[in-house]
Length: 256
Image 1: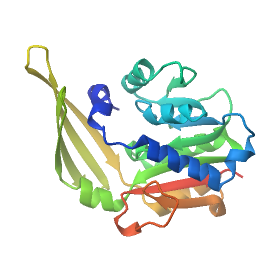
Image 2 (image 1 turned 180 degrees about the vertical axis):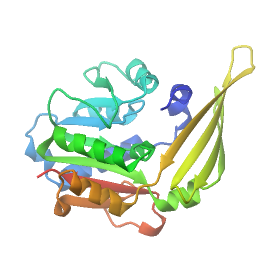
Image 3 (image 1 turned 90 degrees about the vertical axis):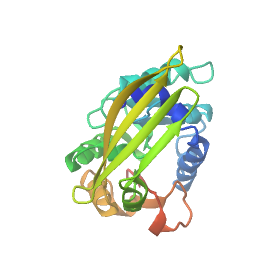
Image 4 (image 1 turned 90 degrees about the horizontal axis):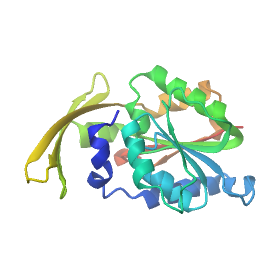
């Protein structure tokens, strides 16, 4: 769970293209005819593991009736405290676990982006999440999510180290990849600039687990989705992609 990093998450991820991801999500909606399925009113969309809510807000600005759910109260504090304004004040922020969440009713679409599912530590957690998604998804609704690819785990993450620096914070990011366990441990050291010019150090650890395409597709089917209503894309693009070097595997599953 993100805690110390939450405060600087957006600042350190300044290159993240949330508009591109929102465009991709809308292209999936269009692909499945969801834009006309629910009429002219904004569709009800749940952003699962929404983090600081930047994608949630972007979709809200495009007219969708958004809810953002995340386990980290620190991330939601950023989402609700910084992102709320007159244009997106109706976003509902929910502090719950994506493996065991409860809503007031069903929604038209559920999204889970930026490899959030890779943070679930066990295969059983994936099944719990998918079953909950299926339960709260309208008939004809779509579940859109992405995970990090095997290529990314073995070539981008691997045992590499990264340094991120902005005006207010210095971040040292060390990776420890286990091919046997299909996991990557991240040791993150945050150095926060203080008013006197000195730095305050904090450490946070995270772990991601690799889940392959076959397992995820089988998990979707076992929780109620039909094979013929599941599509796989790559790197937030509905078009043809170079699967070999793709960093993200993107799924779209329609509940029929």
